[in-house]
Image (cartoon, rainbow, N blue to C red; front, side):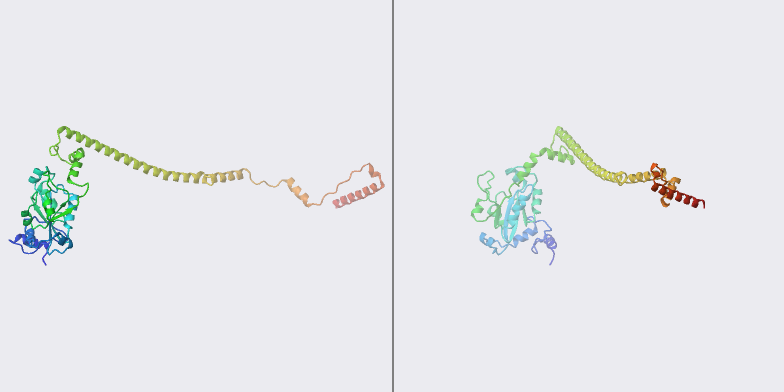
Amino acid sequence: MASAAGRRKRSRDSSGPSEPAMRPSSLRSEAPFSDEPDADYARAMCDYTQKITLEMARAGTAPRPVRVYADGIYDVFHMGHARQLKQAKNAFPNVYLLVGVCSDASTHARKGKTVMNDTERYESVRHCRYVDELVRDAPWEVDDAFLAKHKIDFIAHDDYPYTTGSGVDVYARLKERGMFVATQRTDGVSTSDIVSRIVKDYDVYVRRNLQRGYSAKELNVSFINEKKFRIQNKMDELKDRGKKAIADISDKRNEFLQKWEDRSREFIDTFLMMFGRDGRLNKMITDSKTMVRSALSPPSSPTPSSSSEADGLNSPPSKVRRLRSEDDSAPGAAAAAGDYSDDDEQDASLGVQ
C-alpha cells in the first residue's frame, strides 16, 4: 500500500481524486483546506442521501463517518480552542471534523479587531490534531446551502445563545432540527482574557519587546515613553546585577566560613597536640626537668664515717668499763671489779700478742 504522503501527492497532481486521502495516525501533515483535492475526495465519498440521526450517531450505528462542523474566529489559538475541537471530534465514535474560520472582513465588521490576521488563524487551526478539514472564510451564519455543499450532519458549538447583538441565537434553527451538538467552554481561558492580560501588563510587555530589539515605532510608543521604558529596563538590569553580586558575595562568604571552620579545627587539633596536657611541649619540658635534675644532683660516693659505721655494725659490741663508785667497797662489788679487771688484762695481753 502506498504511503499517505504518496497518496496525497498523487491526488493533488491528478485532475481528479484517485484514492482516499486518509490522515496518518502519526499526524505528520496539517489538515487540508476545503478546496484542496483531499477534502474534495472525502466529500465525494460521502453519501449525503443517507441521513444520520442524533441517536444513530451516538450509538455508533451510522453507515458512514459523521461529518461534524465547528466554526469560530479562533484568534490567538489557545487551550480553550483546542479543547472545544477535541470535544467536537469525540462527540461520536466515527467523526470527520470540519472547522470553519471566519475571515478578517466579516470578523472586523461584526466583532472587532483581531490580534492575528485570517491567514495566521487558518494555519493555527489546521495544525490542530483534531481537525480533518478547514473551511476558509466561513459564513457568520450557517444556511442550508452551506450545509449541503459541505455535507454537514451536525454543528458543534457551546450551548450559550450566540446573538452577536441581533437578539436571536444563530444556532436556534439547527437546535430545533436536532443538528446541534453542545460543547463546553474552558473557564478562565479565552481570547478576551489573554488580551486583558496584555493590556493589564502593557508596560511590562512594551519594555520586554523594546529590550528584544523592537523599535518604538513598531510598538506605537511615543518618544518620551520609549525613554522612560528604556530607563526602567536599565534600572531593572542594575537591580538584577546587584542581586547577583549579593548572591555571589553570600556564596563566597559561606565558602569562606566553611574554609575558616575547617582551618580552625586543624589549628585547634595542632595546638592541643603541641600544648595540651599530653602534648609534645609538656613532654619536652618534663624530660628537660628530669635531665637538669640529673645533671645537678649526681649520685654521691660513700664517706669514711659511713664506712666505719658500717664496720661497727658488723663487729661485736665493745665492753663498757664500769666506773667505780662508793659502793665498790662492798665485798661483792670488789669481787666483781676484780673479775672485770682480770678480763681487761686478759684482753690487753691478747692485743699485745
